[in-house]
Image (cartoon, rainbow, N blue to C red; front, top):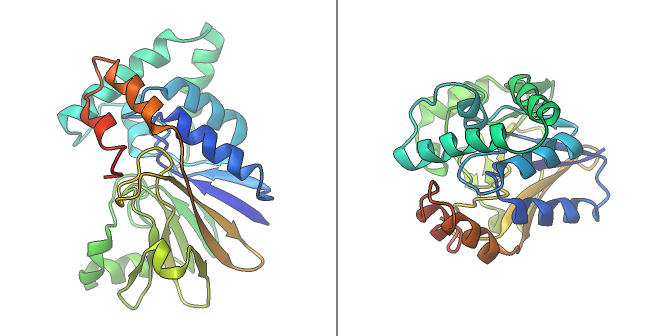
Length: 251
């Protein structure tokens, strides 16, 4: 089976639609979303509707959780975006659809464990909120603890920085592996990157195609109309301009 793994859409409709169109062209049987459908971006409702309709599995992200409950540990910019996102979910659409959206968010699982394949938003230790950054490879204690919690492969998002963590203390960026990584008997943690807000100095949308049979992980990067997305952000008073600015350099 070939699965598309998307994460960290963050209300970026142009990026999501570009990714979904690409997914439709590459022979994928299922789509898994690893969380953070909303937050930061200007189209949370539209992105949520597409995920509800198109994704076979969706995991709870920290921004999805914050939309439902009291946000914890959010900076002022992210916090204001969450409050605005809540308002949009309350305002847009008929009552029945609004209720379905809230129910969908409220029922999202924190992880999906398929034995050799574990799917989370944050980490194997704390599925929703823990960050695993590339620089964490030097923290032997943290990395050993994380690898001890997975049976074989863990797929995650949250940092918006795609790549592969190995038990040997490496972080392999997509370009370093030629955008395709061969899974082996060695454990691996794979960050699938961000659809809507990349932060690895590459502004292109990112997602992963996982081939269960060939045991390959393919990182796909796609240009999208981020000028249109930025324009929408700048037009919304409650969304800080830096949320649009950062889309251009991918930071």
